[in-house]
Amino acid sequence: MFSKDVTIEGEILAKDWKVNMSKDVKLNTLLAQAGVKKDETTGALTTPLHFSTTYQHPEFGQSTGYDYTRTKNPTRVSLEETLAAIESANYALATSSGMSAIVLAFSAFPVGSKVLAVRDLYGGSFRWFAQAEAEGRFAFTYANTEEELLNKLTEDIDIVYIETPTNPLMVEFDIARISQAAHERGAAVIVDNTFYSPIYQRPLEDGADIVLHSATKYLGGHNDVLAGAIMTNDAAIYDKLFYNLNTTGPVLSPFDSYLLLRGLKTLALRMERSTQNAQEVVAFLKQSPAVKEVLYPGKGGMISFKVVDEGKIPHLLNSLKVFTFAESLGGVESLITYPTTQTHADIPVEVRHSYGLTDDLLRLSIGIEDSRDLVDDLRAALENE
Ligand SMILES: *Cc1c(COP(=O)(O)O)cnc(C)c1O
Image 1 (cartoon, rainbow, N blue to C red):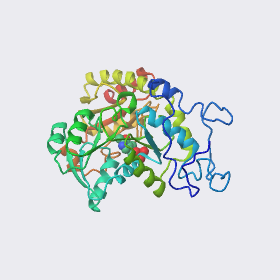
Image 2 (image 1 turned 135 degrees about the vertical axis):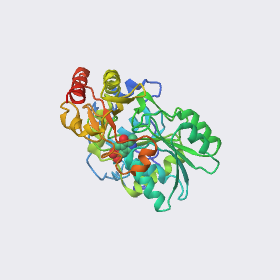
Image 3 (image 1 turned 45 degrees about the vertical axis):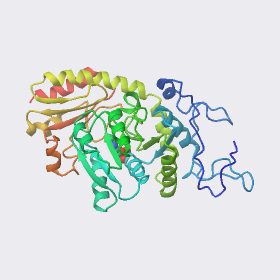
Image 4 (image 1 turned 135 degrees about the horizontal axis):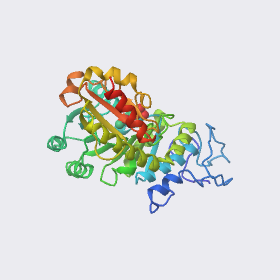
C-alpha cells in the first residue's frame, strides 16, 4: 500500500495512479464492475465509503498514499479509475459539478487563449464563457455549423470547444474531423460529452485532448448527485488539472463519489432503454399535428421539438402527468424543459433566435419508463385542448 514517491505534506501526490482495469475489457463489463474488488484489507465487493478527511502517517516520512481528502480520497480514486476507463483515458478527475469541470478544463490553458466554440451550447457554459471574456481571461469566437467552425479554425485559435450533439438543437459535429484540423493548427480540443456519454461517443478515441461531463446527468443517472468529470490522455494537461483542482478545491465529496459509482453500473442499460423509448416518442411527435419540427440525432435520450402554437406551451407543461416539468436531463425519470425560461435563459434572446433556439422549442429527456405511458402523456397534453 505504501507509495514511495509521495510527500508527507500532502500536496503533490496522487498523480501516480493508472487505470487498474484492463482496457481490453468491454465497456459493459467496466461499468457493471465499477468500483468492484478495490478493498485489499477486507475484500469488500463494493467500494467502501471513506469519509475520513485525513490519514495517519505510518511513520515520519511515510504515507499510505493518502494524506488529505482534497488531494486524494480512496472512494473518489475508485470512481476516477472507472471514469478514466470508460472514456479510454489514462487520467480522470471527479469534480463537484459539471461547471467546475468546465472551469477546471480552461485552467489548463494560459490567460489570453483564443477559443473557438460551438454556438449551440449549454446555457451555463455560455454564461461562464461570457464572464471569462468580459474579465479578459479568454477570447471567444462562435460557430453555428461544422463548416463555419472549420473555416474559423485559423492558426491563432488555441482551444476548440464543442458539445455534440449540440444543446438543444441536437446537431452532431464530427469530433475526429475537427480534432485533426485543430491539431494541424496547434489548437487543443475540449469536448463536453454529457449528452451521448461514452456509450455512444468516446471523444478521446477520436482525437480530442480533453473530454468532460456534467456527471449530474447520464453518468449519475438518478437526479440525486451533482458532479463533474474530466478525462485526458495527456500527462502534462493532467498535471495542471490535478494541481489546480487540489489547489482550488472543487473536488467531488466521498458520498457523491459513491453515488456516482453506483449510478455508473447501469449506464449502458439506461442508455439503451432511453434510446428505445426516445425512438418511440420521436415516431409519435413526427406525426402529431401539434408539432412543427422534431430534432433528434437518432440515438440517445434527448429530443427537442418545436410546437405549432407557442401560446399553448404553458398549458402543455401544466397538463403533463408522467413527464416532470424540470431542468436537467439524463435521469431514469422523463423530464420536459423549456430552454427559453430555464436552461438557456442566460443567452440573450437575439443571440438565441439568431441560431434557431426559438421560443417554440421544448426539450425532452427520455427516461426508462414504459414508452406507451410517455407517448400517451404527450398525446393528451399536445392534442386534447
Ligand atoms: C448540466 C450541464 C452542464 C453543467 O453541469 P452541472 O453539473 O449542472 O454543473 C454542462 N454541460 C452540459 C451539456 C449540461 O447539460
